Image (cartoon, helix red, strand yellow):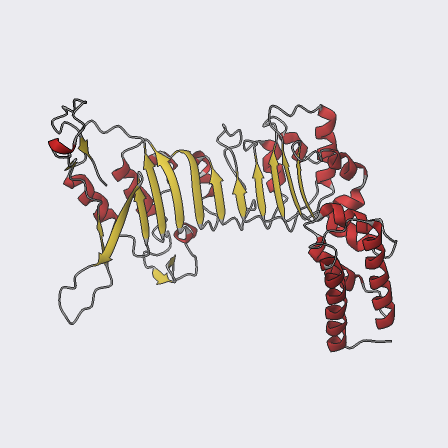
Amino acid sequence: MVLMQGQKSSCLHALATAVTTTLAEHGDGRMHNVKTLNSMTIILHTRAEGLGTGNKELLDAILDPLAPHLPTLASVARTCAAINPSATRLLYRHLSVSAYARNLSVVNTLAIRPDLARFVRTFSITLDDTDPVFRAFYVDLQRALASMMHLTDLTLLIDASASWVLSNGGQLQGTLYPFLEQFVCAFPLDASVLGFIARTPGLRSLQLPVLPSIVDSLLPTHIPRLVSYTGPASLLPILASRPLTTLHLLDDLSLDNIPPPVVSTRTSETISFSGHTVHPDGEMDTQAHVQVLSAVTSAPPAQVLEALALAYPGLVCLRLMTTAAFWEAPDMTFYTRIASTLSTLPSLAVFELSGMHWASRPKSPSSSFSPSVEKEWLSPPITPRAVELAEPDELDGNRDYDFDGAFLDWSY
C-alpha cells in the first residue's frame, strides 16, 4: 500500500493521537507497569500494519513526547525490536551528565558504543572538586566526544587541566563537528581548545572562563561565523574580525583590549546600511555588527565608553560596570561627557552605568521643518535627598534618637 503525502500526514496524526490517548490514561505520559507498555506496543504494531507502513519517521514522531521522561523511554526501547531503534535515538539525543544525576556511567557506554555516541545532539557534563574521577574516565570522555560528530551544543564544565579530552586522541585527522553551534567549557584557550574550534566551522556561540590564555592568535579560518562571545576581555582583539553581535566580557576591560575603529585603506567613503558600515567596494566592517555588550572595567569609564563608541558604532544595549576609584564625587562635567558620547550611537536604546539606568528622549528639533531623529541622554538624579525624620511625638520616648539628620539617602 503506497501512501500519498496527505494520507501520510493523516496516518501520522492518527498514530500520534492514539498513543497520546493511551499514555494520558496511564498518568500524564508516565508508564507504571508492563501492561501499559504492552498496550503501547499493540497500538504501534496494529496501527502501523493497518496503514501499511513501518516508517521510522512515524515512530520518531510518536515517541517524541516521551523524550523528557527518560525512564519511560528506556522501558519503551526494551519493549520490542520494532520500536527499539527510534526509542534509542531519542534516549541519547540530549544528555546532561553529572555526579548529582548519578549517570556518569553513560560516558563509558558512549566510549565503547560509537554507534550510540553518533545519536547525541546536545551533551553537557559538569564535575567539580567534590566529584573526583580517575584519568580513565577522561580517556573515555575523549573517546566518546570523538564519535559525537553530529553535536549541536556542547558544555564541558570539568577540570581546567583536562582540555586534552578535546584532542583527536592520536588520530591522524580529528573529528569534524560541522553542526556544532554552541560551545561552553572551563578550559583556557590553549592548543587543545584551539585545535577543537578549528574543527567547528559553524560555531556561533563561544563561552570561555577567566583563565590565562596560552594561545594569543587565531587563524582567519577559525570560527568564521561566531556571533556571541562570553569570556575574558583579553581575547577581544583576536576576535575582532568575526561577525560578533553579542559580547559578555567577564574580567577587567582595559583600553588596550578595545579594537581600534576600522578604517578602510581603499577609500574614505562609507555607506550606512541597516546599521552597519559598508565601504563602496563591498567590504563590511564586522565590528559594526556588535549590538549587545556588557563589561567591567577599572579604567576611567568616560574614556572606555568613548573607545567603545568608536569601535562598536552599532550598539543597541550597553552595560558598563566600573571599579575605578572616584576620589571626588562625579560632577556634571563627567555626566555631560558621558551623555555626549552616547549621542554618537544612533542605535543605542539601553544604557546602564554601574547599576544606574540612563533614560533618553528625542532631541528638540532646531526648527519645525526639520524633525529630529537624534536622542539626548539624561543622567540619573545625583542630588542627595535628606531623610525625612518622624516628628518627636511619634517617636518612642524610651529611646534616644539623636541623629540630627546626619545621614543622607543618596537616590539614583
